[in-house]
Every structure is written in C-alpha cells, then in structure tokens.
Image (cartoon, rainbow over the protein chains, first blue to last red):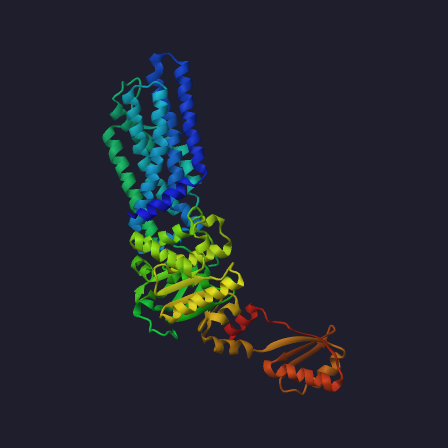
Amino acid sequence: MNSVVVGITLRQLLSRRRILLLFLLGVVMVLVALALRLGLDDVYWDLYTSRLLDNFGLATLMPLVALLFGTSTIGSELDEGTAVYILAKPISRSSILFAKLLVAIACSVAVTCIPMAFAGLVAGGDAALVIGFTVAGAFGSVVYCALFVFLSLVTGRALVIGLGYVLIWEGVLAGLFAGSRTFSVRQYSLSVADAVAEASAEVLEAPLPLTTALVMAGVVTVVATVLAWRRLSRVEIAGETA
Amino acid sequence: MTTVHGEAEHPADATATVALDGTSRWYGNVVAVNEVSFRLDGGITGLLGPNGAGKSTILHMIAGFLAPSSGTVTVGGHPARGHPEMYRHIGLVPEREAVYPFLTGLQFVTAMARLQGMAPAEAAAAAERAIGLVELTSAQGRPIGTYSKGMRQRAKVAAALVHEPRILLLDEPFNGMDPRQRLHMMDLLRRMAAEGRTILFSSHILEEVERIAEQVLVIVAGRLAASGHFREIRRLMTDRPHTFTIRSSDDRALAAGLVGDPTIGSLAVGDGLLTVGTNDFGAFSPSVAGVARRGGISIHELLPTDESLESVFSYLVRR
C-alpha cells in the first residue's frame, strides 16, 4: 500500500462538496433520534433505536456513504483523467487498489458510524445495542466499499447503477424472501448488530444466521476486491483525441 | 521499420529505446492506428498529424495505457503494457488538462516524485529543481486549481521530468503556453535530448514540430505516412502538386502566356478565376510574375487552394 496514494485520495475525497450532503444526512438521523426520544415513552426507546439504526443507518446512510466514497476513489479519477498520474508510476496495481480501498473504507466508516453512534445515544438506546449497530455499520461499510470500488472500475455509471441496487435490491427485494437475504449486505450487517448487541428478540432479531452472514460478507468482499484488482490491472486509458 | 536515432551528445542506453512493430489498434470497427512500425533511440521526435489521426493512441500505447490490437509495443526491450517498473524510465505529459486542483504545484510535483519511489527529502529537492526548470517557482505555493492553462501544462511537464526519465512522452505539450513559454520549453526539451534521452511529442502544428524535432513521424488516419528528418519531410511537402487560383486584369491572356511554361501542369479559366496546377512550387511564382509583366497584366490575387495541413497530410498518404 502506498502512503502517497492514500494522502492524495484522502484529500481528493474530502475536497468534494458532496461530502457535505452525507454529513447532512447524518445530522438528520440525529434529529430524528431526538424527536423519537422526546415523543416516546422510555420503554420504547430500545425498540425505536433499533428501528432507526436499521432503517436509517444500515439501510440508507451506510450504503449511500459507501457508494459515494467507493465510486469516487478510482472511478472518478479515471473519468476526470487524473488516474494517469498514479497509474504511470512504478507501483503495483494491488498497492494502488488497497490504498484506494482503505481510504474509501476509512471515510465511509467515519461518516457512517459516528452519526449512527450519536443518534443511538440521543434516541436513548441501550449502550450494547448502539455499539452493536455501530460495529455493524463499520462491517457493512467494508463490504459495500469493496463492491462499489469494483463497480466503478467496470462502468462509468457506477453511481446510478449503485443507487438503483441500494434502493431496489437492498431496500426492497432482499428483505422479502429468505433466499434473497443471503445476498444482502444490509442483512449481513444486521446479523453482526444482533450478535454484538445481544438484545432481546423484540428489539432486534436478525433473520440471517451470523455464520452465514460472516461467510457471505467475506466471500463478497474478497471476490469484489480480486475482480477490482484484475480490472485495474487491465484498465485502458485512451487519449482525448484517440 | 523506421529507425530514428538521436543526435545526442551522449549515446542513449537500452532503457531509452521505444519500438513499435506492425502495431495496430482498433476500437470496434474503427481503426485508430494501422500497422505502424518505428524505433526511437534517443533525440527529439515529433509525432505530427491532424487531430484524430491516432497520435494520442500511439503515445498511450507506448505509455502502457492501451494494449495494441495487433503487433508489439516495447519500451527498453520490454512490452509496454503490464510492466509498471518501466515507469521509472518514463515521464508522461498527457493531453488532458486534469490535475489535482487541491494540490499546490510543489505538492503535486513532490507527490509525483514520491510515487517514483524517492525518499521525502530527495523528492522535495527534485520537485524544486523540476519546478525551477519549467519556471513555475513563483507560483509553486498556489493550488493548481488557480493556475492558467499554460501554468498547468508546465506543472505537468515538471511532474513528468522530476525523476529524470530516459524517455519523455508529451501529448500536445505546447497547448496553452504563450510564445515565450513555448520557446523556453523547446529549449528545455532540446537540452534533455542532448543528454541522451528519447523525447517523443505529438503536435498538429507544423511550425512547432519544425522548430524542435530532429526527426518526424507523420501520422494520417492511423497510418505512418512519412518519417525521417524534418528537412526531408518538408521537401516532400513543398514539392507536391500545388493548385493556385489567380485573379488578374486579363485571365485569358495570362492563361495563354502560361500555357507553354514547363512549370504549369494544368490550366482552367472560368468564374472570373484562373486555376493553375503546378508541380514545381519554387519556379512557379517567378514564371507567373514574368508572364504578367511581359503581357502588361495586373495580378490582383494569387491564392493556394490546398494549403491546409490536412491536404498536405493527405498528399503524403497518397504517395
């Protein structure tokens, strides 16, 4: 992994204005948490903290943040033409990929988990429950980043395709059937949250067994990373007037 | 295969050799580069051709960013593609303007030096030296996003030569530079070539290539139309058939006077114009002036009809 690539990528991601939108989304989640706490009796705090962190955190904030960071790290550089400055160097493609992936993951975890933890505490949820969802947010961010970095190397429309996938598959279809849950990053994360929080079934019950979730998440992450590496090794850059 | 040897004071080493052998590249049904072969062993070579001729594709294949559809591209004896170690010997100035806008010029060039594997102190010194070479020192602390096109171009050149590569590939390097910067950059490239480096730059402007390149590769519609020393290419371009239109006080009398002239290949009178074809560009003008003077004819206008670069290139392709 190359520290210069890490530095450039980090500054590149943080200089984009769209990051403000993500922070706003986090702020909205905290405000919703505050409204829940003020409007509900304390016996419901754990239940609604769980629902908020699942539906707003794991289902919305986490994939959107990872989508934006994951597709910006390499995909945007290829689109804008700055990728040549990194690719025309005596650095292995795997080193470049890992540096980019690491930055995408670090940024995603920070922008996802900090608001989730804060919102969980504001909503009055049990500490173990909040920790469970925060760990799950970090876990899911890793899987999503690997997926979206790969997607950005395959298509120039990674943002649109990724958004469709998040909204349609992860948001609606994957939760409907037992079989489809096996292919949902949100469901993997929910299993991790359940395992860490050890909350009662009324508050949080993940439908997917933890072992299945861990194995599937590992397979998806590794396969996406290997495919991204292969793709980056073969990526072609044409001239402006080619 | 065309072989281009540099006129360097120091002989080029093997790492500075670039060779294309029967190289073609196509995108779907579109052939961008068609069976091009040449070998560069140092010195400055101009890749001359109209826009869209395939110059960028050739440079990108040498830089390892595009795989040839057929044939081979080697740099220092190794295949250009899939060989990141070769970038230790290559400096690349891409045509696209995009540079990290949030980095200052100095940060950008230092980062490029670090990516070449230099230690921090060594990279900082090399970056300052490279920025000095392109005369960007006064603006080195400003973010590149605030640079003019010419300054950005110079920052890209500084980044390309910060590790003192054996091979320098420049895609339309003089774009956006003012005349003084252009002359300075040409002088810099000449000095680098004299040190034994191989420099290949693309341009669609004949005068740019004429002023700097020792050797020229003319690319038209993806094919290598001509190659060799610039003077030879220039002679080919000058000696081709030329067509002129003439407006005079008496077109018919002028045509009658010119018809026996050996420099004239064809004559046509009509639409208030005399159209003349000649194979001898050098002798043609004095002949027309002599006939006009002897016949008391005034020439109001004498215009070449096919002096566009595209028509010059097309002629070279047809040869």
